[in-house]
Structure formats: C-alpha cells, structure tokens
Length: 294
Image (cartoon, rainbow, N blue to C red; front, side, top):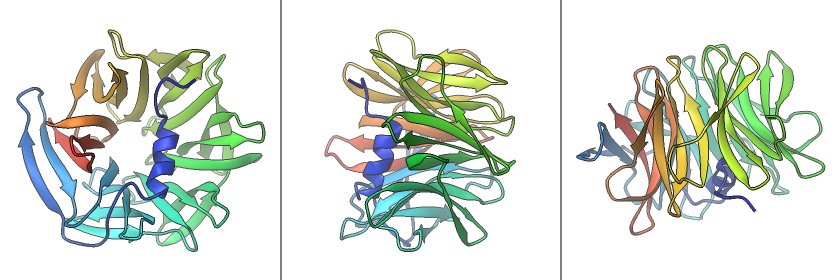
C-alpha cells in the first residue's frame, strides 16, 4: 500500500476538475509567515473552486491547472497577472506542469477514453508524449535544453520515470523500485522524483547516473522530491502525522514550506531566483496556488 498520495494521482485529480479557473485578473494576497523565512503570495481567481500552481520560469511565468464551473479541468499560463487557458485539442481535461525559459510547456491531458497522455506545447503547437509501450503517461517538467521528464505506466501496470531527450526516451528506475516518477529536471540534467521499495517511499536525486535518496528527517512516512533549480535547490513534500507539508532542501538543510493556515502543502517548482511555486489546501478544503519568496 502506498504511504502517500503520489504526484501522478494529484495530476489525475487536476484533470478531474479539483482545481480551478480561467482568464481573469489575478487576485494576490501577500502573507508574511512568522514561522518561516518566506513571504507567501496566494494565487486565486475570483469565483474559483480551487487552484493548482506547478512551476515558474525565470521570467516569472507560472503554469498550473484549474476547473471550470462544469468541473472540466484546464491548464493555465499566468503571465503578467493574466491567466491564459491551455487545452489540448479534443481533450476531456488538461493540466500544465512545467515551463522553461523559452516558454515551452509540458503537462498531461485526458483523451475521450479517459487515458492520460503527456504533451508538449511549443509556439502554439501541441505534441503528444507517450513512451513506447506505455498505456498512460504524464510529462512533469522541461529544462532549458528541452529535456522532458515524466512517468508512464506499462502494460503490466508498473509505473516508471522517463527522460525524453532529442526524441529518445530513457526509462528511469532506481534499483529495486516498484514504482517511479521523474518529476523535476534542471539545466544540468539533474533529475528529482520519487520511488517505492516494498513498504517504503523515498524522494531521489539522479545525477550523472547516480541515485541519491532524499528523505525529510525525523518521523515522516514518505518524501517526494518535485522540483530542482540550477543551483541544486530541491523542493517537494513529505508526510508527517498524516499531514503533507512542503519543503526546501538547500545545501543539506531542510526547511518546511507551509503557507499559514494550510492543511496540505506541496512545493512543486523552484526557479533560479529561489521562488517556490506550489499548492495548498486551507481548513475549509479550498485549494490555492502559492508563490513563496525568500
């Protein structure tokens, strides 16, 4: 049994319409947190039922997902305070997860049969990303070199991470893994994600072919590494006491990243300026995106 909801499961829930809304003017509220070294800015749209923010690039553009009034999921690009909706043509739901400095966007969409596929959006053109032999796939991040990471499920139902580089797919599985997701990649091709051994759930860093475990210290029951920037700072989430929290890992030091009042947090992306993007749930069950500025 998995010890925490996986990032892929959260991605699927975004397609199902848990998150939120379209091209309106952004409502932002700066929240200084006395419990952390960050200033939190909440990302909400008037009338929205919930927001999921995933990544930002050096230009400050943010991507994520939302649900409309009918419950259909859409991706979004937030650029200079304005939301632009992202919908894969003919899809039953779309979520955007990664954006690089060139504005290339990756994410996931659902087709008419309910199957998830990864996609790349480049200069207005959508391309499906499905590793050979996959029955479903998701694309989570793209770096400045155009390398894409994600995960796919094979015919046996096993999930694997993947790297797509210049048209070639490479499977990513830490030794002994029974479930793997490759979720973040930086300009140096360092990859972070999570994997499972029987009864264990860990984050990982993959650097030049070597896997390093990432586990939040103490009694947590699972760790996901979700994003990495050019400086090697890593963000993600961990479970402790049945609650999920965001974290930053910088030069060997872990810092919890939880917006005030949150009951669930995941820190998903971190840009070159050290700004962290993610989402959280408040006490009422409402989902919000956030930016945490150091």
